[in-house]
Image (cartoon, rainbow, N blue to C red; front, side):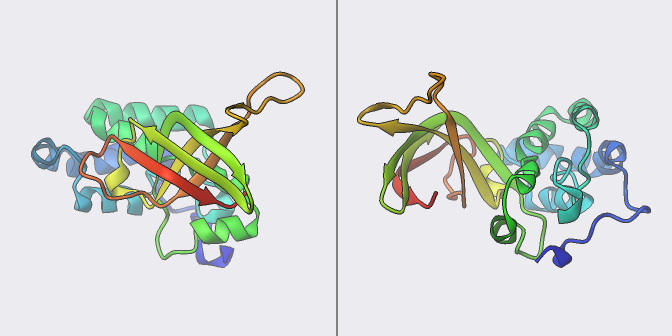
Length: 199
């Protein structure tokens, strides 16, 4: 599965070059973005192709595996051109999860023909243990870039008997799960009825 995503070559674009490389396309799409209230498909495809969404993706999965300081410079560079584009690029850079998953997990997320685009809803939902996994529900109010995303990353607090499950240290562990996003009208909201997902 990993062979499908070769590491970037030494002649590939460097992460810090991405904002200047894509600046003409971003500026050309400004009026359309204002009308749509979203990033147009053509610009989204250009961002994906150039690697704007693989800054933190492991090298073995075709990503840049950039240090956080470099990623922040890239976000700042996009922000100087268009703040909304920078925000979506920032929110879509969840490729680091590839370093946390086993081969089955990376195969599922990176098993398509293109680099996956993620989006994130940072507000926590609820995960209740059930047979075979967890029942997840929530209302994620800020999910920037959801219309162009392949995967939605949500956070849910594991509950037991109506209260957060606590560890011995007294800390409620967050719990994340990747699901395919719906195509709702509002690009900044996502919600889920209770849905069973595997552990």
